[in-house]
Image 1 (cartoon, helix red, strand yellow):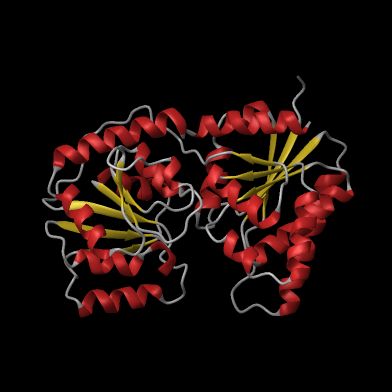
Image 2 (tube, one colour):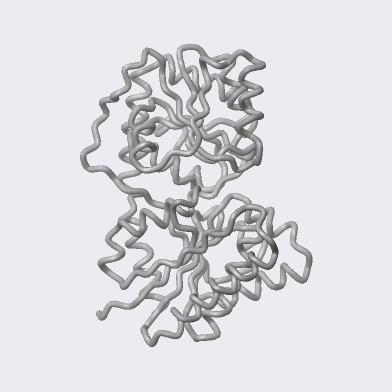
Length: 359
């Protein structure tokens, strides 16, 4: 079969977040060998505090560049990675332009808040979202649970489940380079109330023999300062460290040195950071939200805790901190589960099936 072109649109690195990580991993996968893969960066390039005129001018340039790609006489599929909020409406312009040129569109829904986004729409905007969905050949969702949510809130459309995947390091070893006497706990992701940051800080008051590393940017503006103030107030400076966002080798160093991964979120899609930790053989402590139950079975790859339950969270952390054998057993189970079901090449296979069906 002759190669066809896939234009993949979304926020490319150095943008922070799960979507940009997914795009970077796909860029480095075998997908580029199977299709003519082109990337279209939708990440905001203008500075904060820009004028409305500057913002409009930037978007017009972006859309003109998009039109030039669509006008090229090549068999093409458009694959747009999007999420909730204003981002969706901006990306819907790309969808409409693609259909104007009769190019089939696949949209790939990320993020943990799309259901709340839909619930908050007025009747006109809700009808518009459904209209946009009807223009798409396929709508990719991250789990079967999310598919049920979409059907319930928006109706039946051509949904298809494609779980996130991560690169699988074939040189993996379970030996930790960390020489610290304390157990290293990793929170990897942008700091936000939605990810259970405050409950995690409270839980650390009851944990001994461990240090919690917050690795990620600010999703909630000013949350770094708020976390620092709470840490100081509760005298947790020796237990909690904020490192900010890390990329590439720096991020991999944190993963390689960590003993436990924790993400007590209130809402999720399918967190890339969770899969990255599992691929490194790290046992996980997470909440059963979004697509997480499809990845983690309680007491096997890690421990599932109730949303917002600080005591259960502290108990789970203490259990893994105090039991290195359990950490190893759960970590190896996590690694095996990720390798068998959530490697990036598994995602590539599923995407190729979707592309072939669309063509």
